[in-house]
Length: 283
Image (tube, rainbow, N blue to C red):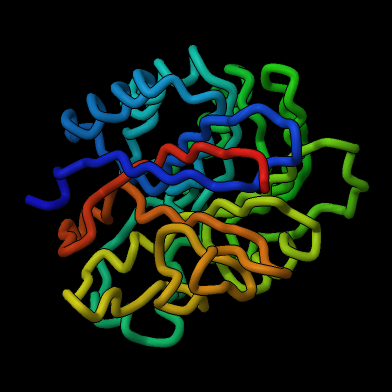
C-alpha cells in the first residue's frame, strides 16, 4: 500500500544570509500516528540517521487517544540528537472522526465538532518536546542558536482551526536567518510571514492532496492555497519559472506529510514523506 511507502525527499534552497554555513533542516509533518503503526514508528526513528541540524515538526502528530507514548518513542532519536521547533495541528488537539470524504471537494471542508472539548494530549506533547529543548512556536517567536548560526523563528497555532495569532513584529538581528512555521498554509498566514521578512516558510496539512491524478495533480489542498502549490518548494506570493521564490517572494516548503486519517487510509500518486532541506547562502 502506498501509505507505507515512506520516502525522504531532498531539496537545496539558497535562502541563508551571505556567509552563513549550510544548514540541514528535516521537515516532518502530519504523522497522524496510531499505536499500531510500527512501520511508521521505525521509519521516523530512522530519520535521525540523516543527522539534521534542525528538525521542524509542523503538526498533526497524533490520530489516536493512546498515541502519545508511541509518538514520543518514534521521535526519541531526533529529540536526543537535534535542535528542533514545532507547532500544533488540529490532530494534536482532536482525535479524527468519520466524515464524508466528498466534503474535501468543497471550498471549506471543515465541519462543526459534536464535542468541542479537546481529547488528544497536546499539552503533554508540547511539554515533552519543550523539555527536550525544542522551541514551541504556538503564536510566538523564539530563537535557535545552531553552530554559531542564529535562527529567528515565528510561528502560529493551527490556522485550520482559526487559532492563529501572528506574533508581534520584531526587528531582525544582523546576519540572522528568519524562519516562519505553520501547520496549515492559509494565505493570510503566508502573507503575514512574507511581510515579516521570513527567508523561508514551512507548513504541512495538505497531505500533498493525498489523492492525486497523474498529469493533473492534487484535487484539493484542504485550505485556501492553490493546488499548484499543494506540496514541495514554491515561492510566495509569486514565483518565476526559473527559480522558486523569485524577486519579491519568500521561498516556502509544503510537506505532503507522512500519514492519513485512520478513516481515510489511502494515498495515490502521493507517497508519505519527510524532507531534508539543505539550506545554503543566497547567491
